[in-house]
Image (tube, rainbow, N blue to C red):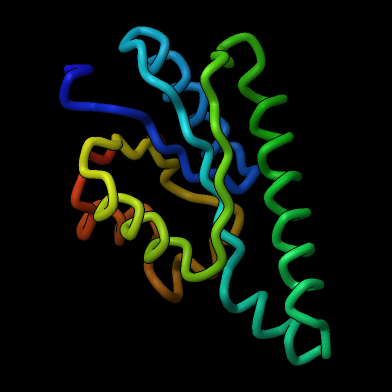
Amino acid sequence: MSEHIREIVVPVDGSENSIRAATFAMEMASAMGVGVRLFYVFPAASVEVIGIAGMSRSDIDQAAQSAAQRAFDKTREGVGDAMIEKVEQETSIGDPAEEIIRLTEDDEKALVVIGRRGLTRMRSLMLGSVSDKVLRHAKSPVTVIT
C-alpha cells in the first residue's frame, strides 16, 4: 500500500479527536515507512474578526502561527511515544475543510487521517462537519477516527 501513499496528512486543532487521529497516523506511518504532515488551518472567520479589531496582516499571520504552534505542541504531547521522526508541520488560513480538500487536490497520494469532531462542536452542527465535507470531496483516501 505504501507505493500508493506518499505521506499521511493529519489536520490538527488540539482536540482529543485530532490527537487520536495523529496517534493512529503515526503508528500507520511507522508501519508503512512514510512521513506525516500535521496540518493546522486558522479559520477564516477568525481572520475576519481580527481584521475588524484593526489588526494588521502581520498581526493576523502571527496570531495564526501562534494558534498553530499551540495545536502542534498539544498534538506532539498527546501522541507521546507514538511520535515518529519524519513529521512536518504546515499552517494555512481559510475554511478548514476547503484547505484540507485543496491539499488532496495537490497530492492525491496523501492519505488524510482526520478526527471526526474538533474543538467547535456547535459550529459543526450548524455548518456541517469538517470531516464529513472532506470525506465527500477529497481527491485522496480519507480515514476518519472517532
